[in-house]
Image 1: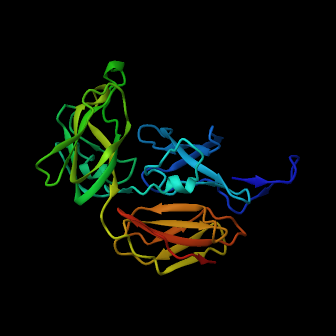
Image 2 (image 1 turned 180 degrees about the vertical axis):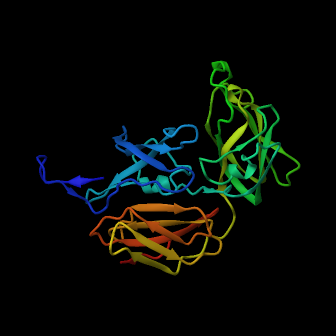
Image 3 (image 1 turned 180 degrees about the horizontal axis):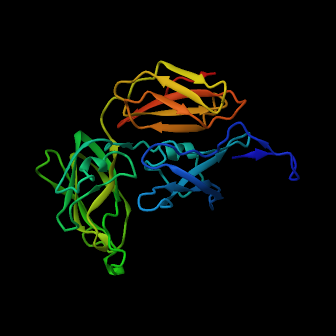
Length: 337
């Protein structure tokens, strides 16, 4: 939250563009507990706590998001699709440029199969874009594998492998605490080509990110276990594939309506028509039509409503719903209260 005053002695006033940081939806959401710093290139960043909570309610990860201040001094944290790949140039940059990297998610809710699965930890849970569900093989043996059917031929630029902890032995020696694996692609699900070999890796990489020096085209992707840390089972929170899906961008949200709760203005119900070709929606809002600094990702294409409960009383808002899929984003039309 930002408050401004003309004096350090008091008179601070809450600003209408609060909160200045919001990360809701997507693969992982924010829990708050953040700080802001400036790097040696004069770029501003927010470091924030991201909530996992699988094995302990305080289980967290660290998120890093670019921050900007406009000509009016308004602070903004850029978190739209904030768990997608982002550039990190070694120079002064515009946060809007590095956030819009262009590699879209190819793996959401795609069909999958595995060498084995524990009951309750089926393979589809490694494609659901949810950090709090996961697939687990029945063992941690070398050769256990997970296969994703991308549904068509897509361009693969990078892969994020989010390993899960399943039945680990906390007393196992430190020498066992590492991930080793191999990554393959295929166009038919039968003939495989190895693109990554981490079979000799000796460190733990719970959220491994592999960026290919040369993009590849594939219809299937497979990860094969070589070693799992601390005697645990081979398990994945999600296998996330980024690139380009060779689809048309989704259509435009044409009908958006907003009902602000008059008894409690913190709440507003947004509804819109389903858009063909969309994988999900980006619900954006703010106190001025050219400053839609808030965004909530709705990652289910069948969901066409959202109840907001973080609005500021006495502030009139403007809203826009964008659509996105495996090939890009289509901006919607701004409506006002």
